[in-house]
Length: 374
Ligand code: OSB
Ligand code: MG
Image (cartoon, rainbow, N blue to C red):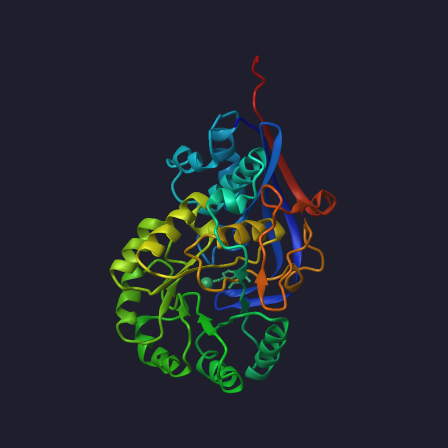
């Protein structure tokens, strides 16, 4: 495959309602999309950075900079036999996994189309129906949260994840658990606590949670090992795991019992596949996390979720939970039993709505391979 053209753009999309986590509130998304033409075929990828460096160090603007100044000039005009060669090509660029992942995933989409297979099958996916959960932002009070939980359960979602932070944790979980003793329930702290809070966090052990996600510092695997030894609730790492080596470290140190895989955070499908493969071999369940993606990122998440290690419901939910209009056709829909069937069409299996993408684009940049004699 020759990488013939790269188009980088930023689009702005407004979430239907503000989403609050322990690190802040977001409603106006600034999403970076990549379209890569390989051998005449167009593939799409999404850079899953936040607008601010509060979840991890990357942002919309750092991704724009790194792709414009380093990644696009490096890969334009290159010939590769598979998208899986991209990580090695970009290895001397340290970090910036989300920027790299957006590009690599666009090439995966193109590769699958050239091979006329669905991306999920090209990746080695085996599940033709994936289980979906939802992530609920922090609310003003437990009653408001309860109303949201009821709504999502009525839609069929198989697992409810509550965002928590100090002062809005145990009481909120208690109210939800009392009303719904049987549901699969988990919490996500996005690094809002320290080891000194271990005694407080132990109160969560009363609620039969599936997991507590990333309670401690975003880059501190060691501290999570210390906490896991003091609480019964399984720890799931999100922010801490940027590659398969980190996953191995965390598992061997017993810092977690579950891992959340995000395509952007680990740098694309190639590394995500390694993480799930390692975890599968070591019997550590994984699930697909979300980053409030548009339909493009969501479609890649669906493909990844079909891999054999993804045994727990992911944060992969319907387009209509986030957007009035999504940029893919058909929109991502979730069945009444809380599942998504990956599409049968080639590539990501969703069509990008170019009219909407164009309308919402606020900046755009392109690179073209030099013409070479055939
Ligand atoms: O920690 O999983 C997280 C959103 C933005 C940043 C971090 C996280 C999240 C979510 C939302 O939990 C997942 C989604 O519905 O896309
Ligand atoms: Mg998380």
